[in-house]
Every structure is written in C-alpha cells, then in structure tokens.
Image 1 (cartoon, rainbow, N blue to C red):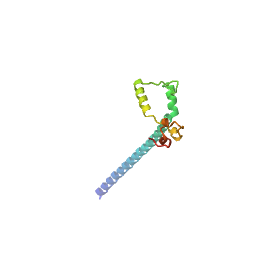
Image 2 (cartoon, helix red, strand yellow; image 1 turned 135 degrees about the vertical axis):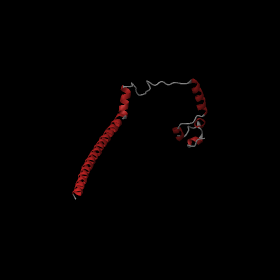
Image 3 (cartoon, rainbow, N blue to C red; image 1 turned 45 degrees about the vertical axis):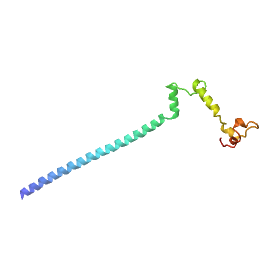
Image 4 (cartoon, rainbow, N blue to C red; image 1 turned 30 degrees about the vertical axis):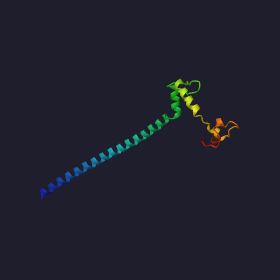
Amino acid sequence: MTRVNLLLGLALVASSLWLVRTAYESRRLFDRIDKAHNEQRELDAEGKRLEAERQAQATSLRVDRVARERLAMRTANAAVTQYVIDPAASSSVAASSVANERPQADDIRRPPPKGDESTWGGPALTQGIPR
C-alpha cells in the first residue's frame, strides 16, 4: 500500500507541475497576443496619420506653391507663351479649311443677311440642318 501511495503522490506532484507550467505558458501567450494587438492599433493609427499627411501634401494649393518655389514654374499667360508655326503644315491646313469652311454655332441660329446666303451656306444652315 505504501508503494501505491508513493506512486499516487508522485503522479500528483507531476500533474501539479504540469498544470503550473501550462498556466504559465497560457499567460505568456496571452501577453504576446495582447502586445501584438497593441502594436496593430499603433500601426493602424500611424497608417491613418500618414494617409492624412499624404492627402495634405497633395492638395492643389501646396502643389502649386511647391512648383513655384522649388521648380521656379509659373502660370502660362500670353506674355510667356511662344507659338510655333510650321509653314508647310499651315499652308495645307489653310487650303483645306477654306474648302471646308462652315459657319460657327452661333451663326447657325441667326438668319443670314439678305442677299448674302452664299457665304452663310444657304437656307439649310439657317435652320440648323448641315448640308
């Protein structure tokens, strides 16, 4: 009977040690999960902050200011615009535009002047119907 009691006592001690180890491992794993969740929340907050900062950096006013200050860019206007004309292309365009001359959109709505229907395209164009 002493052997059985001794064997049961050893089983009880082993079981108790295993239970303590399992509880410790469980707490350690729970702590790691909690730290991972905290890190996830911090990274989400950082991501939202960076996204807001990116949107603030990309506003049209800021882009315009940076283009003026750092790149020395300026708004195009008639004083700084240079038009390049290709003589060969302009002569062929001028010849084709004279052959295909059509009235402007607001000219179609107005009746042609009396005796001047040839330059206005005739009565069909005055009614809004192209030839």
